[in-house]
Length: 136
Image (cartoon, rainbow, N blue to C red; front, side, top):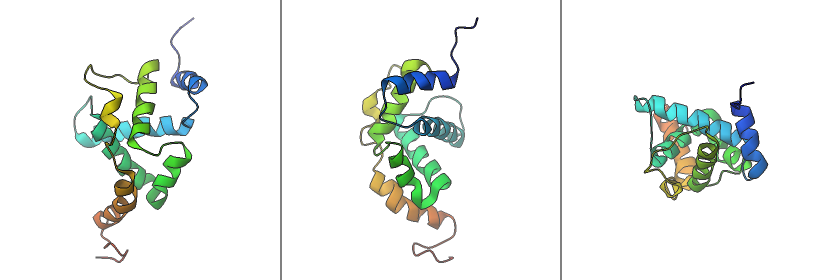
């Protein structure tokens, strides 16, 4: 029998030991990592700050104004929470890290107020609307 666990089983292992974050938070961080790596145009590693910035953009694209609300409903209220999720995934083998990576890389890597309140306005502007929601 194959002793390797599936991603779902590894998530079950995480959730059995740490209930701070919803399963969906782990899935979303993984998807945001893929989005960030693809956007960077190179395969492989991204920094904690790069992941946080990519995650905020991905969340705004997926959830619009509700991005912060959705993340908070999963227990994610700061970039430190993103780091905790990443390192929980590293601990069970779902993600890899370099020797230089640490949880501290995520501390204050993203200002949620700036990213999801003002960031939503910037996201709209990039889509051709001014900050008041009118077509440019």
